[in-house]
Length: 83
Image (cartoon, rainbow, N blue to C red):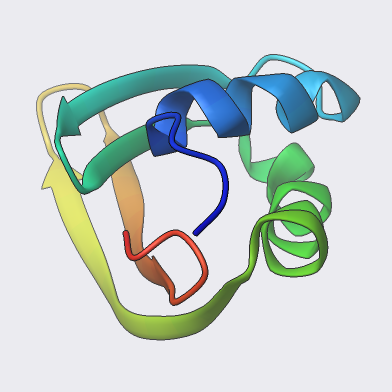
């Protein structure tokens, strides 16, 4: 990998194309992105095409019954970023 920046730093540069994306680094190889459901398809296309996130290892669902909501968690991997 020629770019030594952390994934969150690299992602922040290209994520300007998707509105309202929250980015945080959870560990050396764990980055969290929060996005509204309607922006998800554009985000996934961007992650695949520009950041090399080509492996979807799992989709998890978290139920928040008190809030009347649920959250989908997509576990993605980039071989290019090793993250």
